[in-house]
Image (cartoon, rainbow, N blue to C red; front, side, top):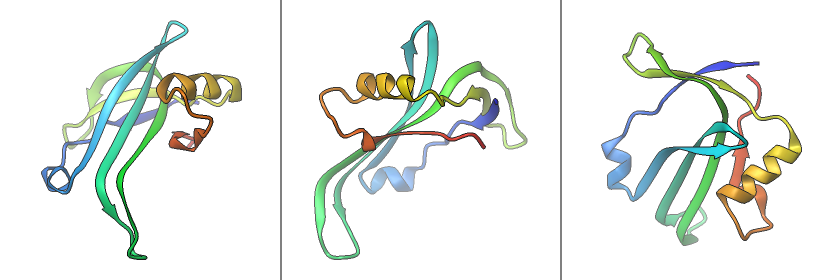
Amino acid sequence: MAYVYAHPIRDPVLEEKRFTLNEELLEYRGRKVLYHYAEASNVTFCTGTGVPWLGSMSVKGYVVRWKYGTNDKGEALSEIEPITDAGEQREISGLLWPGTSDSSRVSFQSVA
């Protein structure tokens, strides 16, 4: 099943707070995979603890049509096919975040 995805807009308020979100494409088996990479520095939790750095990746899916139009807000739209095969998810996780056995840093968009 395919769904339409609106690409995120840069938020200067978040960027001032040491947070970045990047949209990237990965070539995988002749297809393009859309994913977001988010990272933050000097993060403090409500428990009073903190970490110097956090990062994660959210895989949206295979690109079916890239930026083929815009929505009513003028944001670019792409048609994306979710990646549901567990083997493909493991391989893509390894490509995006190599050297770690912890796949929790890479999440996959579920079927809407």
